Amino acid sequence: MSALRTRSPRAGAASAPARGPGGSTGPRRIRLGEPGTAWIFMAPALVLLAGMLLYPIIYTVWVSLSDFDLSTFQPSGWVGWKNYEAVLADPGFLQSLKVTGVYLVVALPLQMVLGFGLAFLLNVEWRGRGLLRALFLIPMVVAPVVAGGVWRMLLDPLWGVVNYALGLVGVGPVEWIGDPTLAMVSLILIDTWRWTPFVVLIASAGIMALPSDVYEAARSDGANRWQTLRHVTVPLLVPVVAAAFVVRWLGAVKMFDIALAATKGGPGQATDVVNLYIYEKGFRGLEFGSASSMATVVLLITMIITYFLFRISRRLENRW
Image (tube, rainbow, N blue to C red; front, side, top):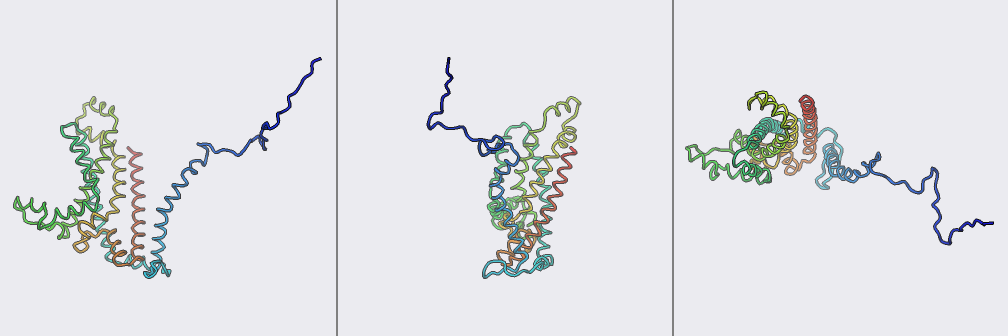
């Protein structure tokens, strides 16, 4: 008769892990792709952004509603809406908003037209196109303060290169910075010189991404270049134009450094854009409560206009 033997577990051998309720053998691991996993990975970046963006905004609003104590350099007493009432009655602030509006209304369309026109020119095959593309990027890499300072020297009425060149053709010295109207024109031209290459870059990328089969179909239908541009290229580029305009708007509304370096807001308040006026109020006039109120008002105006620009951009994208 054969005897069945069962081996007894050896001493020290690891026993099978005890299973908990539901058959689980240990703490549950979080897997990628599960709901909530993305928020775990984004949490450090969100905390950093909240500290870098939300805190300055909240502190600015707090200062705008308080009386700023220069001895302690901290907000002290609560004044409510008094700073905002003073700001909305300040003719200098209202004038700076008007100057900023004139600058935006003229500079942005000019930069968009020049940018897309040059992009069409640079995307046509011709000799020397690559060199000109490289040269167009130079203004974009120059610091705004440096650009403003250099152009201030170039436009100087006594020893500036621009007036010297005009003098060669019999045109007398022009007060580019001293005349109120010409000072605004100069500011717009300087800003256009610096930021048009940025629009060219976006427009060139959009043009090169257009589908070629659409152009082949247009050629087969007998469309000439003007008809192709009007009925094919422009409609396809409408979303690119809208996106470029919104991006450029968000940059142009922050105009400060070029105006500070080139014209210093003068003559008078002819080129005193709103950000420069806020800077003068806060860091030279030491009126931090008023400056914070102005900054908050400008932020609200910018957010409202940006919201409507995004709505218009979305409608254009859906339509075209």
